[in-house]
Image 1 (cartoon, rainbow, N blue to C red):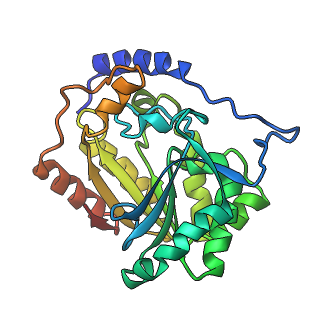
Image 2: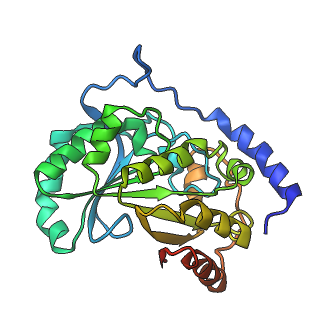
Length: 281
């Protein structure tokens, strides 16, 4: 269970983390200038943890959340020396070379990051090309959609599965853990429900922030009536990406926090099953 004193301390930390801000170039209608290329952090050709089956995973650059446990700290800024700009054709040449392996395992492609919705035009174009080649598409997102327009709808129309990171339903704890409110994430979750868009919720169990009964019940109550969500994936906290914070010149704020015990994971599983959801972990 979180304590109020620690929560206030972490809120102050979260505010200091806002110095790492993305300022994407914007056109007159508020959109980032898009020239047919995506800013890509890295590619994993045979991922096994980013959706069903083997996945061709595209890690996009840029994220506006500042999760204390982020294991991809180096994806926050939109542009870095190591990022590369790729066209859909360039990415598809790689995807096609793996498609037989992807299909054989019931897999496909996954857009993750970073936050892929910050480059939703490119992801839309990529997913359109994937569906034209009968390749399963998965969007791994924190739901931070900046625009609700025909581009987003077209992207979702070509998305077979959305994996939505619902980090914390309580707004105060969410801000302490992530640095910003959860308003956009919850709005996106409701939008997916309105569309009856196939979705899976991912919930990271972070000791002191999301491992208590109240947080699990809040999640269950929020998604309980959303028929488009049939599965919740529980992800125990780990610190495997802590070294990336040091490489980026930042201090890792959760040093010393241990992964939750199996008993905690099973207890949260039992709570969420009470809301009619299938639980995997």
